[in-house]
Length: 358
Image (cartoon, rainbow, N blue to C red):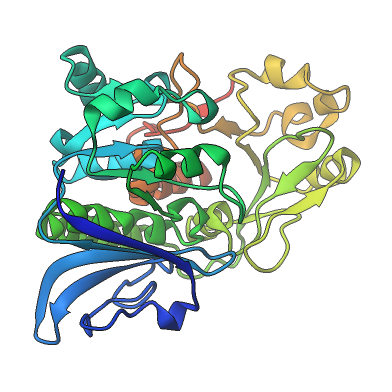
């Protein structure tokens, strides 16, 4: 196991700069878009990686990981972490994943078949025996909300080094993509990560619609437990839609999602041009059968386009939209540009992540 030190505590973001590391890129510092991670360097004049830092956007909990050398063995608790490592050619550093059936990357499945990567289970049903045998340098995890799930405390009690990241809470699409730099720092592949991120960023920005006098009006999602969640205008999906020349109907200001009733969504559906991301539906008929009002929604009743981001959904319940898509927002934006302006596309809507419901 590699030698490093992991410090955890409740601190202010401005207090995440440890003594002796004046060149720490604090969360948000040194990052073009990301807000919740930074990179440690050993002195003012060097950007030699000496560690990384992550801070919770909810309660200010700060993890600082010091490293003497790059890590060799990483267990990934999320598919987006797997995608980031794979994108920079560091998949050999992955020794364990949480829920192999949810992973879309064929390289990871091939390595699992060769017993180079192992499935360590999922949260409350983790395979601790396999984890002990793997003895990873680091477990990269995530949390939903401010409190940690019990399995993370158990991992720490068993002596595993746990590093929590918050890429899924970043609101700008390029902020999530920038986490390849964090994984580049962990594995000694920061130059490769910088190159990858810069290429994605440049392509994304080249696809952005700067101004749009008549944005495409987009109805998003379907209800969950009678609540219809609508992404905020500055949230992840809201930004993607806006950058593609659209606007989410019913969206509120800011990044937080809002909630509306099915009846309100019905009213707004008659003011929309396109319906996006209606659950796991693959056909218009499937969608119409979900709720008695749906056949009367504008896009279904009037034959308007309906697209879903499930082209790369797999049989295990995973979806590559949330895996590789997390680090390739340029490809998602490319899809949305084609969907919103099909007349501008010469390749007949060959899409990366979306299907059109027929």
